[in-house]
Length: 407
Image (cartoon, rainbow, N blue to C red):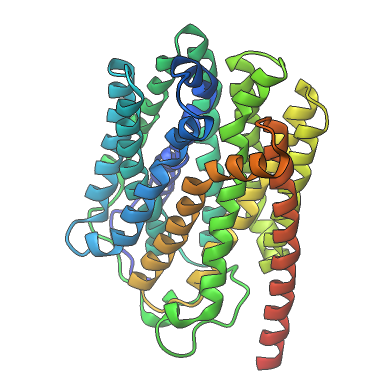
């Protein structure tokens, strides 16, 4: 990797991690979902849930064109623009909230901001860090995303008890990241050689041997895994406040705390990801789906605060096991920094397709059970998570045998 003079690596890491606080910005709306549904009683439940998942489609678009955008604008400027979009979402959401349509506009603006921040901060890690340091930082970044979500859901839950639109104030969390970006992220990125770019430490694979990494079948398997992960993972944040209200567990502060604990699990597992990835490699992925199923099982097992909080913590760990490992696995097939950026963008795009589709889980559960109860949404997610655990375990074993044969 080409070294650049004057780069404070410690502050660069801090900037990347604080910028990542906004990566799960949609979770900031979680405490207010039940209040928004009450504010607009004529809207269907799945329509209200789209406020949290609509940004995903914009993240898909921005992620896919981010590699092209970086050929025109510096990554620093693009990430800064994304941060400003998140900040504006917070300001405008508090000031203008009289119709569901205007709330969808702010969700779209949020999605644009998330799209610019998500893929490009991952790209910064690939630009400036290698080896185990890169693996650890990817895990920490997932943890940082969960920390941001925790702050937004916990404080947002309290603000929502005052008046629901105050929940939007939590998007001012992007301000510190913007300041760190301005002062500590270089305008230009170093280039990696083709030889070093394809060696992503922590990725348990042989790497690309011919042609573009997009021609490699395994890459698209990880793309699909990332999509299904977020489709199921977001069953938690999008349903917690409605679950709390349905079973009389508490108010928006309780649902905000549940969403916070959900993200706390992801934060702690993000810190430990480097250890799990080093020891288990691709097998962290089926383990993540098992954690998700176990957590959702606890949530629906008994509608009380203790079971809900315990389940949220365990289910939250899943994203920090699966998501960064998928990124590492796909990056191992890349040979240039441009391919690294594109692989990260594709994984982020597929994840947000899953996020966008999450409300369909409500419709699927309703069609199967004939009930609108949130209980059946969690039960449907449990079954699908277990299926994914088995499928990804079979895939991991097949990959291991294939690579052993090649060696």
